[in-house]
Image 1 (spheres, rainbow, N blue to C red):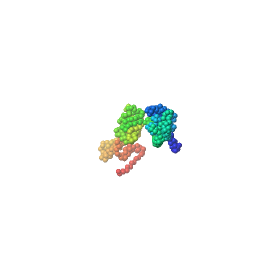
Image 2: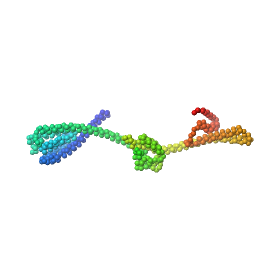
Image 3: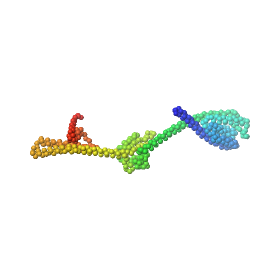
Image 4: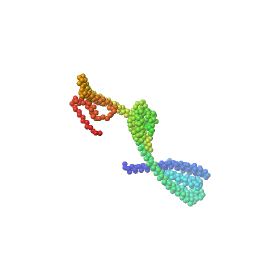
Length: 466
């Protein structure tokens, strides 16, 4: 469907709705006019006739007017014919009042009072016929008065002071002037009503569309919340952190009921694991209007600790002021426990690897240590023989002692390297050292095994100026 066709359909629909609105307004005016007709009956029958003895004529004429109006109301209300008839019946009361008081001039003012009621219909077409009806009355009754004509003995009088065509013309001019004014205002009121009604229709359409949009969005939010409640722990707090709403998952993991949680803050589940600085940083972030995410360890009502992956986001009002905080959380207790178990297993594997490495080196290390010890033992025996024969010379003695010192140093390096390999590196305090020292330690441990396999290792160190 094209935009033009949709626009035409919308215009036709608006026109139909405006016509319906006019009908509704007309029906309300019909009800009011019927009430006005019946309200005239006691005045025209008894009050206005009390000094003239014409109550029977007033009552008969008033009943005829009211009955005609009532029948038309139930048969044709809302139609132009009914509106036209109501205008004539309303001015017929002017005829009755003028007649029952024998043309009293004050009753002629009733014409100017009744005509404005017709603008309630906002239809100028019913005003001229009503004015012509009262003009016809003045012409007819002036003629009857001038010729002393009666109706069943009842005098037909238009004016109580005298008759004359000059008076008829003067009254007609007044009626014509008021008729023109009423026609103008009737049309103005009709246009204003149509404009206001059209605006109301547009507003109703906008409100209906907006309401429908809000309903759709509300259904989406409900669907999101329902889905989120299936997998997540949600908490809503005010701007001060006081809990105002929780879902069932929060009740389950915290072991507190909804009534126990509402009105409290999160200290109720604080495990005292995190520092003050941790929560201060969190509050600083969300108070600044930013989202925060982190892992928190809480404590349930029974004292059991649990871990939650938490995301907190601020909610603002129309003035961009923070009014709530929404926390969405996921239980990661199993994950944290698995991480701890994995870390322990890693440490065990590292420890077992070290022990395995030590076992492989045990043979080589034992050989490395036994050889120096044999040299020390042999050197000591040589020194002992030299001492027995008093053959100890200064140079020879020094050489022997240097051999012992060299061998002891070698044993010390082997033991130091072994200790470094077996030590827990995580708790080790690191010091600055030379790469050469590290290579010496390694070669001290492995030199004997290299010799057994015919491996020769040479290290050239190039000094670098720093």
